[in-house]
Length: 518
Picture 1 (cartoon, rainbow, N blue to C red):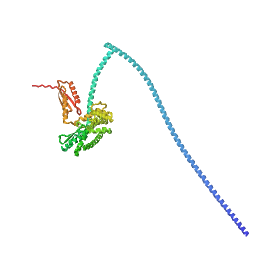
Picture 2 (spheres, helix red, strand yellow):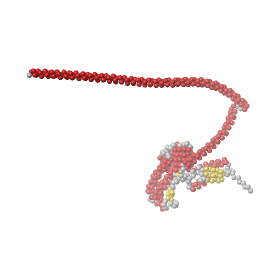
Picture 3 (tube, helix red, strand yellow):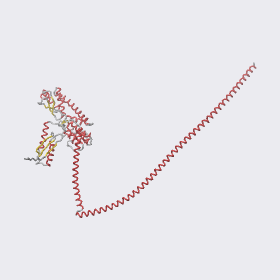
Picture 4 (tube, helix red, strand yellow):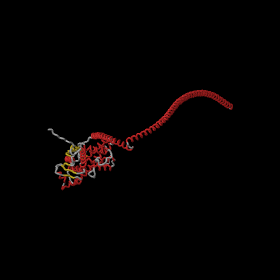
């Protein structure tokens, strides 16, 4: 048994030794294989590194050559530019040298010219002294021959020159005045004709109606009322007079204020339509109509501003413009007349190169004083000028409103323009109308004024009273006195009469010689 165990142990030891030796041989073989693989990888890596190094060196060399060529090209371009700049600078230096040479030459010529001028001035001064001496000698000789002193000769010469100049000046002034009159007349006629042609309005305007139609004569008694209480209440509420006479179918409303008259007319028409006529109802109707009329007045004023193309104006002036709708002058509606004057003034102003907007404003406001002339003392131009000044209108407008009838001195060109436009609007045919009685009275008054002068034989009013033809005694009145009589007649007509537009005074003086052949 012990031997067996020892054999087994020996066998185990021998087997372990054999296994250890086999492992050592295997490890050595594996190590040898790894060393060979490592050597192969190292050799391949060295070869790859040498290849990369060679390729990098080649690329670096190529890049170096490329940059060097570019540097050489840029250097050559810069050198070429420097050479061209040097050439330009050389040319400029040559030009500067040439200019300097030219300036030097001019300076030399200028010095020479100045010397020549100085010499000529000296020569001229010497000649002037010689001429002065010669003139003095000639004057002395002339004075001795004429036996006159210096002052006498000068005075005689100046008188002769003054006399000659007076004649020439008078002739020149007369010629210029004649030319100016001709040109002014032609231009004024063209401007006026152009203004009239460019504005075509109705020749007549509706006047304010002062009569109210009634359905029957029984209505007159109802209007008067018991013991006249209705008519008294109506007159007290409206401020007008109601005339109830024997005229069939008509009741007349009379009053100086056109707005009150319009309120009364409308109120009376409403009362007649309503049929209920008593003091309380009268007061109600009159109050309602007054509100309507005031509202209508404002609308008329705004409408006038729109038609005249005027944007802004004080509200009080707008209301006064509306009141002009109910005011007439010789049958012509004053508001329509003001609009017409505004348009005509604009055309005339623009033809003369002035501001048409200002002229149109002046024309629209020129008769604004007529809206309150029954309430305020003074002429309507004066009242209108005060109103325009009070409500902030410009000086040109104030002067035109106050001076369009010659009451104020014209301080701007718009004042005579408004006067001309006002005369055009008022005097053109059909613009205004009068009653037959007033028309006949005006003609009779014209003839009476003309025949009142000594030396006047006959006088005839013609052209609807726009001209008075006066015939004088040729034996007692000469040409000089004829002109004076015509002027005095015109002046007296201006002072004693009221009329639209202007009146022409034509005086005729003739000698008739009659013989009979038998």
